[in-house]
Image (cartoon, rainbow, N blue to C red; front, side):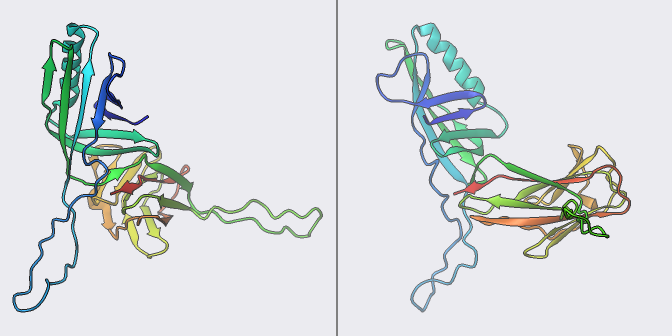
Length: 282
């Protein structure tokens, strides 16, 4: 059953004659519609057609959810209107999530308007939630993959005795970030300490390198946001100035990227690399 959630408020897909006491929706507007192009087209003055478009950028996404609520009493209706307004009317952008037969996708939205039309005679109200998402993409739940630092593998021990033991396999120190979505996405790269000089992350297929030069103590975590180019230490502390080499990459649709970690300086504890990648959809 399809449903949407906005700030803890849930509405499920419904039609006429559904049981009272539940918030229902009947239309998700353009939730599944790809954003329109916002790139200007310049027609050729003295030739057929228009000049070529180098980059076809997309606009923000605009969509409207509509639905209704029917209560057992008028008091039920008034309480639900209050709950609806608490969830929908807000000063900051927030997530809205739609769950359907393929899973859940989310956007960060601004609620532009949310008119409610109540009917005391039928003990019900209808609603519309007009939303704008600055980032037009829908994102699925992030998938996390992690690894430790590279370690060498085993090998044959001499003299050879039977049965033969080859030792434990080494760890290449790599993670594979995958994107099964229909649009490119960016990973969050989380590195935990300790490393006295920082670390270096290399994307294998492109050879792009990102270097962070600052001690990362045991118990601390640095997060590199490949979308925004910002680095955070242990949550709110901005340490972007230590991200001294930025060669960011994205994960294309239906593709993957392999990331290798290397420590700088002296290693203590068990440093790890984790890549969090949310698939993106038009």
